[in-house]
Structures are given as structure tokens and as C-alpha cells.
Amino acid sequence: MYWLGVALCLIGGLWIVINAFRKSIWWGLGSLIIPFVAVVFAIINFAENKIPLAIYVVGIILLVVGMPSGASYGAA
Image 1: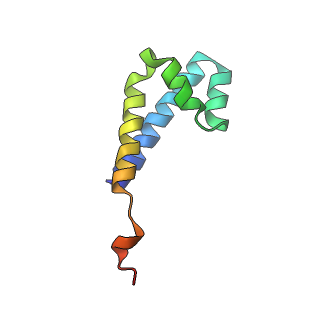
Image 2: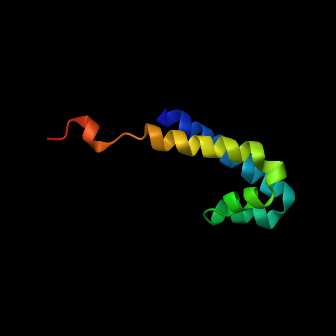
Image 3: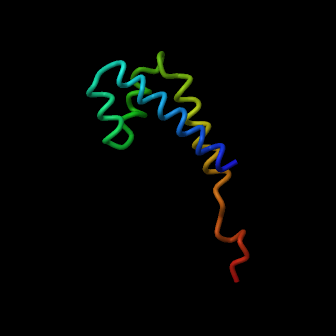
């Protein structure tokens, strides 16, 4: 589940960045350089980004749920 979450986050995030570059060079650069600008862009332009944002959020959920914990590796 963890790796599926990673893949979905990459796909959704890349899709949002591409849409940001389509809107403006500044949104695109901001999405690449400044953390969380891509998410802010996706929320502000929700109509165009609802599918990639949903993919990104599902990816984050799968990352958190599938994240390996240190206790499950037999720590003494």
C-alpha cells in the first residue's frame, strides 16, 4: 500500500504542476520551488484540478496507512 501511495502522490502532484504551468509560468515555478504551493493552486483552481487533487489525497492516505512502523520490525 505504501508504494501505491507514493505512485499516486507522484502522479497527482505532477498533474497539478503541469496544470499550474498551463495557467501561468509563476504558478508552475512556485509549485516546483515552494512547498504546498501546488496544493494551494489546486484548491484555488478546484474545477480544473479536482481529479489530480483527489488522486494526490488518496495517495497521501495510502502513504500514511501503509507506512511501515518501527514496532512491527521486532524491536527488542
